[in-house]
Length: 601
Image (cartoon, rainbow, N blue to C red; front, side, top):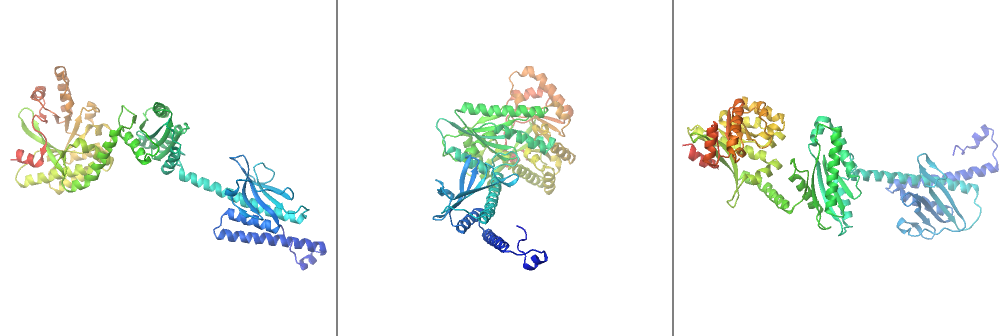
């Protein structure tokens, strides 16, 4: 507005002669300045007391209405979604402030005495004359000419209203962005878990009986391989590529849980169409990634759960889909599976196992068994293999096939393996104290150890604590662990051998075997899986097994055949020139106390 409030001394120095008209103009400017200053002061007070922009707009409209004795002062804004002007704020002389939920019908504007002054927010700031604008409407009671001063003052107030409207729009946009960040995964743009569940529940309200609804739980196989070998940027691109595929279908709601885990809610006319959709997405994703990473085989593992009714527990439905995914994780012959009710029963069994594990371990519910190993030709004991059985409170003995896989998936197997190892050391110590030299006992260690810190340090520490020489201990590792490329496995097995322990490759011949692999792995013994003895046409295979055994013996110290159950099998192996074996023909696994009484006389 400039400095229009000069005093008489300043005017005299500048040679300005004060006139009546100038006096009137100065009074008008002071009046306008005082009004706007008062409104600004009230607005600041409103903001300070926690009022929002709408409160400030309503206050300003009311001040304008009362200042000019208007019937109506209102803001009309362009609504992009509706593509029309809509009322957002309104003050009426008779009704006061009207709220948005009262705008079912527009406030009546007087036919006479209405002015509209458009201002709107845009990229270039505030400007006039746009279709997408905010308009301050004012209606007064009696038609008549307004003075220029009144019009100019109203324009100033309209600019103030326009500023408040722009401020509200900015705040609303910020809120929308904040809500977007709260509901969406920053990397992929998909929903986060809570927002996903909320959105799915909304869709389920529109449940239709002629539709099928499915929850699909997916992960990217060996995703860590991409991160480790190509970097996290490449890994992020893989995640975004899969998210883009999910977004191509309209009848989907998708969520990125974390890492490479995704959930999708999908609906269609029938189950076959949904399955085809899932398979198509999976194949297309694998094809895209093969073009980028020709040396890799990046594919998806997917579990599908079809919902039966709209009021199903969503969390359980998601868990069912995830349970199905886990059931084929690591399976080379399947990448997709549909949920079956028996999976839930297995899941409940798994929960029961995990719930009882810790207490049973402390109370001695897990018992160490030993199965003897024999010289094939003399029927004399050559050693033993430590195994574990679970004695339940009702006296039942649980087979390891029922609980070992569950403990491996949960990671509890690490505790159980070392419990068995320590029990073997305790018994060995008692045998030495009784003046009896123990046979070599082998102890199995799961792959789960090598997904953490390994086994070397803890084995050394326990062995020293019980004062057992390493030569009496044999460490068994499944051959799949050596074949999987775990460098920690090779490193620690080499360290254990150097410390005096014997190392055995267990289950050789179960699918990963390579005779060439045996040249590289630090092991002393190879245990041949019992599947080699279950073949019918043995005469044709005798020469093969002989040669295989000789090749193994040429690079390792011993070959032991597992699962010998008949005299015919024993004679066959003796005839082939093998020395060691174990199986029901010789003896079954027995509690370590029984083994002690039977073989430690």
